Length: 290
Image 1: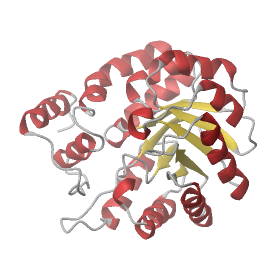
Image 2 (image 1 turned 90 degrees about the vertical axis):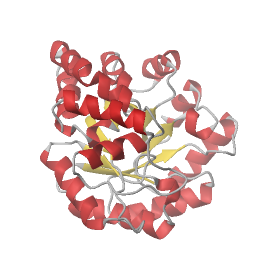
Image 3 (image 1 turned 45 degrees about the vertical axis):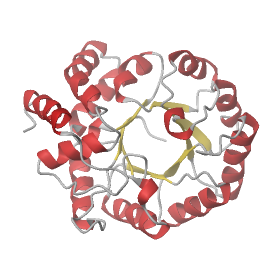
Image 4 (image 1 turned 120 degrees about the vertical axis):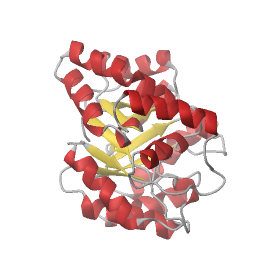
């Protein structure tokens, strides 16, 4: 699929709440100039939950148009399997390199239901699929044994693991076949996961410091663990501060401070409190980003 760093890119909005299409193009160009390996539109960080289907596909289209070198892995998941198939077909028609599919949220399916959900999508649309496990968002976990089963489905090629369960992630890394890629879904643990064999990260932080995240993940892939560790600890305060509030509130706030396209939030998301905003501002200042 890809190796290194993929950015779960934000969706910038104008003051009237509509998509800032030119701003999105500017952000994609910034990512490309930093040498990012993949761009992931319409994920959690892209506020996909508040996009209409038309807007969802429009965002993917813009990112696909502007991306010249990086892979485009489009968020296309849903808690309704038929809806995920619809979005996945739409993303494929737009020419993306693959899709990132969150496990069904709110429904809380059992492991059999989760497997059948992904299997149905994989059979319906011939496109590389990356499974996304984030129990804090979905209300259910994809067990390591289920990931191993999914890895046997021909066009399911990887998993973005954001469970925070290191024992589970180690079990996945130990049991999936070599062709199946494991990506960190949490910037904070990317370094240790890559030390155990993960292929990289689908990152929030790379919206802010794409070059630094690329350098860290590439150093890890090349076995330069001293360089990777130094960059990990340099970015550690930012990793933490970007989750002072619900993602993507802090990352969009940081981009706004940096005079990058960001804009307003769509309800029910709203601005950070003043105190946490100042914590984030200090970290950005310490990193010489302001």
